Amino acid sequence: MDTVSEIRLSQVYPGLADKVRAMAAQLEAEGIDIRVTQSLRSMAEQEALYDQGRTTQGPIVTNARAGSTWHQYGLAVDVAPLTPQGVDWNTSHPVWRSIVVCGERLGLVSGAEWRTFPDWPHFQLTGRFPITPNDEARSIYLRDGLGGIWHAAFSSSIPVEKA
Image (cartoon, rainbow, N blue to C red; front, side):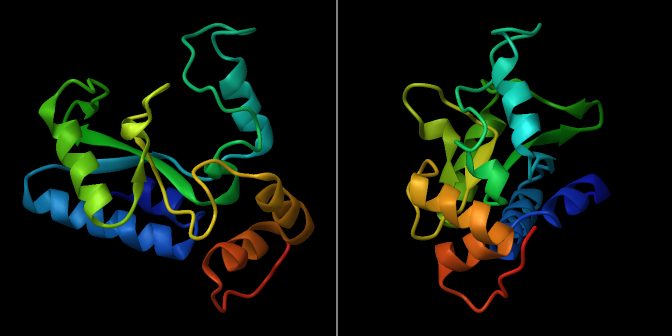
C-alpha cells in the first residue's frame, strides 16, 4: 500500500483500515495494486461533491448530501486500481470486479452493488448501523465525534473522544 493510501487510512476506523490493508495485500498477490482515493470527508467536502454537476461544474458523482454517507464518519473509503500511469477509473475493466469480490469477501459493503447509483470505488464497514447513516448515527456523531460513532457501531473499547 502506498504512502498516500496509508495517510488516508490513518483517518478512518482502525478496523476498516485493517480490512482495506488486507484487501490490498490479497489483490497485490493477484498483481493488482490499489490506492485509497478518498477516506474521511468533512461535511463541507461532501456537500461540495454533492453540488458537483448540480450547481457547480463537473459530472454528478454522488447522490449523498453531507451527513448521508459514511465517509463523514470515518467508516468508508474509496479505492481504485493503481497503474504506472496513475489511477485507472475505467470501471468496465475486469480488475474492478476483482476488487469488489475481494472487499466483499473481507466483510466490506461495496457500493458497486447499489442499484440506483452504483459506486464502484466505495467500500464501507458500519457495524450495527444500516447502509446509509440514520438519525441515530448523526446524533451520536454530533454529540460524541468519531470515537463515539465508532464505539456505537462496533461496541468496542475505543475511547470516546470528540473530533
